[in-house]
Length: 241
Image (cartoon, rainbow, N blue to C red):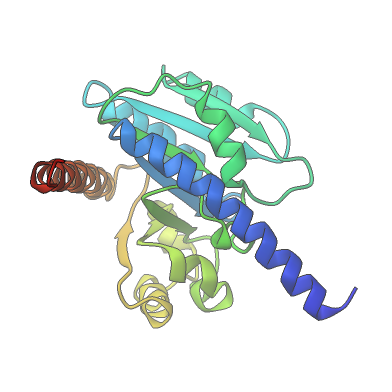
């Protein structure tokens, strides 16, 4: 198959995915739900961070999780143990979730107004970056047990993300990982990216991470209210025959 044809196929796949992503975004916005797409390598601590996050958010606002893994329901089982509604998507040989999968998964969730949906993507820093799932923000998670030059090795994920979470900071004294250098590398790729250093084990940075989620949720609700008001004003100002 020619390179031109491969590019064409990729463009067609992304275009189709974009249509499903718009459907997902419309449904989530209709419920005032903030969706976060969590991207990381296998073993970066996504699920451990997510479990701790859900436990700390109990009683604040509704939360749901869509779990992406090639096989097993292990991570979804861990999420459900926090009394959070979760849907498991097994992708088999697929290395990322797509918007059609998310659209179908939403049918199994009891969405409520003003909640937060966490989408834990398949463990991979490369494949998920180019696929819009209808989320409000991509969050890339990188552990201190990985190289601090990952942002320049896998630039697409960091370029697409609004937030870099450096996880497992409790292990930093035992790893050859320069946190400041990692953040600098991420900002080479994406000057606007924010960063938070966390440890789900000892609680470092968890308050800052939760505040970021709350701010993102509040901002989305404000934006939706503003858009609704603009539509109402537009209808009021439309001449009637």
